[in-house]
Image (cartoon, rainbow, N blue to C red):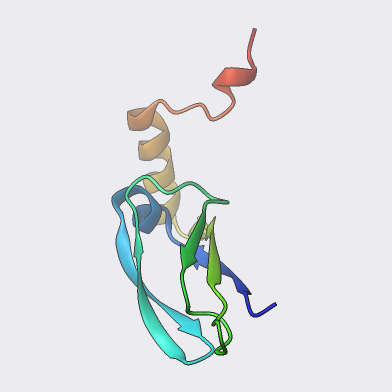
Length: 96
């Protein structure tokens, strides 16, 4: 087929708050509107942005949230503050 698949690295704030991100397509870059609250693994379709032809293929973009490294005291403190303020447990649904 003419469909194209792209794994797109996104920052946590782009995923949480939404963002417009330039993504490559076979015919050049286009702006992708990342919806607010996007989870890692979410797949977005850009209709007609795959390989050109009749009909053109679609571009499927899979969001992959990437974490900034905690390689400085400031970054580590930021992560500690997030842990303290957000009270988020992504495994809560696994607990009895």
